[in-house]
Length: 218
Image (tube, rainbow, N blue to C red; front, side, top):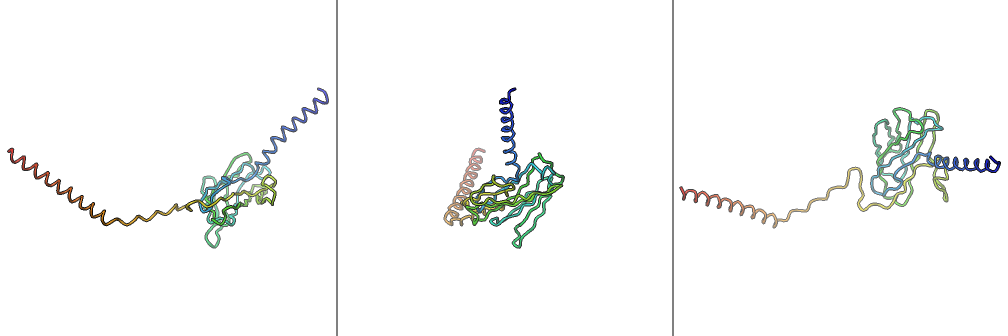
C-alpha cells in the first residue's frame, strides 16, 4: 500500500469513527418526550436515558418541577420507588425516582409523570433540571441554552418542553366536568304522560274485546 493510500484509509476510518461518535455523544442525555405540550392541559411526560455517569450504573433521577407547572403526578412503574417534595400549595417541587437495582450503561430506562402546564406558560420553553445519581458520581442535567444557542451546544442540557397555546377546553387528571342537563320541558312531559295513558287505555279495550268474542263463540 502506498503512503497516499494509507493516508486515505486512515482518513476514511477517522471519518467513520467521528460520524458514529458524534450522534452517540449527542444522544447521551436525559431526554424528555414529548418535547411539546399544550398549556392548560395534562400531558404525560417520559424522561429517558441509556447511560450512566462515566459508565457507572444509575441509581436515581431527581427531577425539579419548574415554574409554569400547575401540577405534577409521578407515575408508579415497577422497578422504581418515588419520593416527592411538596410545596406549600401541595404541588411537588421535586420528584426523586430511585431504581430498585442500579441500571447499567447501555440499558434503556425511563420514568414518567403527568404534568399540567399553566396557561401562563403558553409560548414558553419550560426546562426540567434533572440530577442523575450513579453508584459512583452524578451528572447534573441543568444547563439552559443562552440566546443564539441550542441544546446541542451544551454538555449537560436540561430536558425541555415547548408549551403551546391553551387547548379549547382546559383539562386535568379529573377530566372535564359533565355539563348540567337542561330542565325537562313541562309540555313534553304532559304529552308523554298523555301518550302513555292512551296506550294503556287502548290495550285495555283490546283485551275486553277479545274476551267478549271468546264468550260469544262459547
